[in-house]
Amino acid sequence: MAPIVAAFGDDPRVTYGGKGFGSAGLKLDGRIFAMISSRGKFVVKLPKARVDELVGLGKGERFDPGHGRVMKEWLVFAGAPSSWLDVAEEAHQFARGGKRRAPPA
Image (cartoon, rainbow, N blue to C red; front, side, top):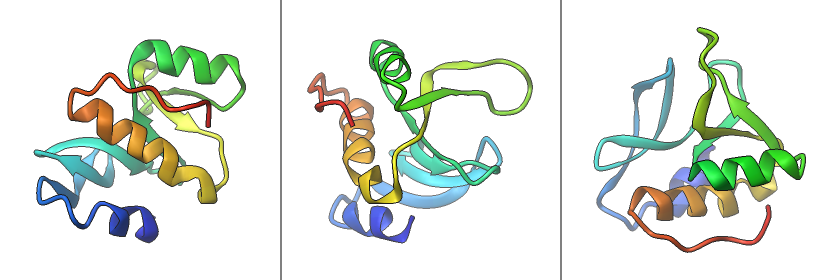
């Protein structure tokens, strides 16, 4: 996760730490957009339609924080750590309110 955290070091609105869903994460203005879950999985917040698309492509699964309620805008990303930055940037853009779509990860 360290390379991902470092990639957002120039954005003063982004911080790393705290607890959300039982995990520390990257936050924009105090709201998590990417994290390592308590189960060691890389999780990002994306638009529901994008999560649906990536799940359909086999690129991940919907995130369940452990209480049986699947989160519609959260994806457990199945890609290798080398591809995490792309999806983290997409999640950052979504957190900023952007509508830009990245190519399938």
